[in-house]
Picture 1 (spheres, one colour):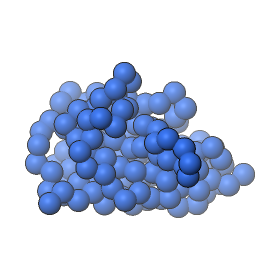
Picture 2 (cartoon, rainbow, N blue to C red):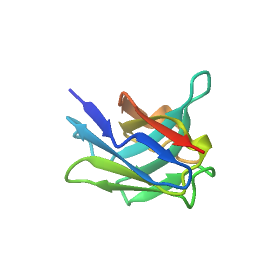
Picture 3 (spheres, rainbow, N blue to C red):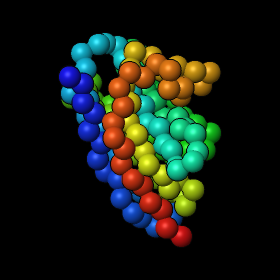
Length: 126
């Protein structure tokens, strides 16, 4: 059984930093894609960042490029999202996902993801 456990969410002021972690247990395929998505109530899920372990390719949405950094520890099947210079508009529920491909035009589509975490809340105050 595959399980994704996210951690690191919380509340910070604008300009601050947070680091999200997601550990994927039970997922044995390789290479794989792990990514972070975010979704606010009533809005579509947005791909934020993803990394493909077959080559270490990384993908970022334009809204976070230059501020967020995704990395992974293959041995631990864990992906990290370092979020710096946080903005109020980064407030969202953040979901981790793992799958066979970083799909979509920009590598941030949900189509290649097979398993999803339950989410961790990030709240940025002004």
